[in-house]
Image (cartoon, rainbow, N blue to C red; front, side):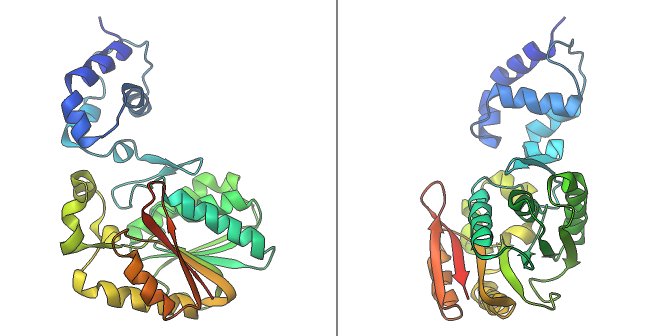
Length: 281
């Protein structure tokens, strides 16, 4: 007779090399927590082969967030599927800076737009952190992503102001946004498919949605020039546009953005790499 706790410890030790390849830095305690969430078992239960599909997925290298259909971001748990990107901790920097900008400059009658909502982790985290009513317009080209955003909005509605208005729209960037906003933010696809794909972790490349990750190399610059111009046109005077980008390409995007916005700055992530572009109108 073997308890769940002992079984997971043994599994972890016996598959350490394989786990390290697919899940760098994974500790046995995290593995236990993920398995308990998936199986609804307790560590003190007897393990008799339950939830084998969990281990089959592990051995294929499926991200833990997709196995359990949840990911933690900015103090909330979000429902996710392979239709949306897995939230990254560095993106919390953008959310924190966005909340600070909005609190400093706006008190009421303001609206914000998120381009490429995915799981809607950024927009909902912002609404929760602000703690006051806000009108959020969110666009995405993927209908599947919009459905996930709707699910997360419903699941987390108790955490943000009941007066907050959320509008989710199928839209390529801001093409379906027919008004101006106080603030626009985005984590757009920013990896060049040919030039950069070889540096992307195989797990990310295999399981996460390519449409949210990659742009064709030949279209890259033109795509962002169009995006910058559209963001500028959709901003009120005194507003700002914050976006996440690729560390190797942000300086080039900075030069493009400076041709559109009067003030543009770069910000680094936790590893001191260029990661964010902040543009002010």
